[in-house]
Image (tube, rainbow, N blue to C red; front, side):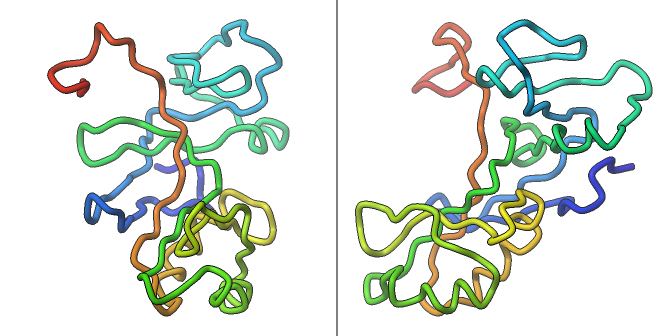
Amino acid sequence: MCRFKGYPRSLKTKSIQGEQEWTIANNLYARTDLPSESPVADEVVRIDQETAICQPSGDVEMSEKTEESQTPVYRLGDNGPVGVPTGLIFIRFDKATSLDERREQLEELGFEVANEADTAEGGWVRHKSGSCEASLSNAARLHEVEGVRVVEPQFLLPRQSKSSRGPMGRP
């Protein structure tokens, strides 16, 4: 059973590497309100000073306070890396289309430009509400924008030490 009812169970992304699918990892969640680098009880791995991936021990009660600070963790494919969504989505257009040309269409879909890329053909967008849940739930609609080639939500991934990597930097 998924604890994060408003979030999509899976996200199909279209990136330079091709199509990929991220699915909620039901046995994990992320805490995004950590006050310091001190570990929390269910912490599995720290992503940054404020964010950690956690694995609940037993039933976890989710009060209103913790729901705001807890987000799902997604897994790439069946055995791929896990990541915490930020709510930002990178979009890239074909060469004949610029982000500025599609700004109005993006706004009609409920998105705003968060940051333009160095090239005119892409940039970061997020849902106007600022909600990560809304960005992910509406990400598929970005494919409706004329000229879109890439739609890729941003995920914070745990760092891997060099010793845990295999050939060519892969785990």
